[in-house]
Image (tube, rainbow, N blue to C red; front, side, top):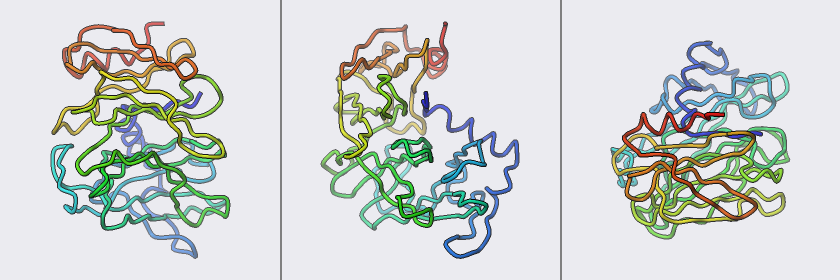
Length: 280
């Protein structure tokens, strides 16, 4: 099962530095390619890496293009990203590619996420995009069927609907073991506190299949998201806290039904990190 937790981001970035993956420092300047350097980004800590660097398609992603055009500041400051950069394998060649958002949008996010959302065998990039009028949505970027030269929007959830309304990802995976990838997030973690699960359907892209209220995973101004996904005994559990930040909660998706149970008291980030580990 391909399950990704937001907690893995820093781990992946540190491994990229540890193993000094050459392709992340620069790429060939050839047709359809850009010269890229993740270390020179405005957000070098946003780098995420697929450690299987021989796979086709996207193998690394990061944000760049710092901007103050969307002054929400939910993650601790009003500086957001306007660009998404990737390194992609094209047969025997590696290429850097860049996607630039419209002026009314930003990546209101900490780091991109890598997962094969549509089942085509290549990794996609999952990111939080916020619109100046419509608020946040969760977007999936990748390569369409016409090749690996252009990074494109594949699918997205609806925008929340108004400016300065955000969502905080929990993670991705086949949460109900139906063979289709899902993504979970908290819709307005400071206000509505609704957990939503979207499934990536083969013909229609991201479609909501389940939701439940009374859960959250972020407090205004924190530059991290609390919780993630754990895989226990072959089953995925979405780890968050309750709306009052009193208890750690595990939520399981059965078909299209969500059920939650309290795992223990929330006493800070360390307590939830322990709960992301499985006892079995």
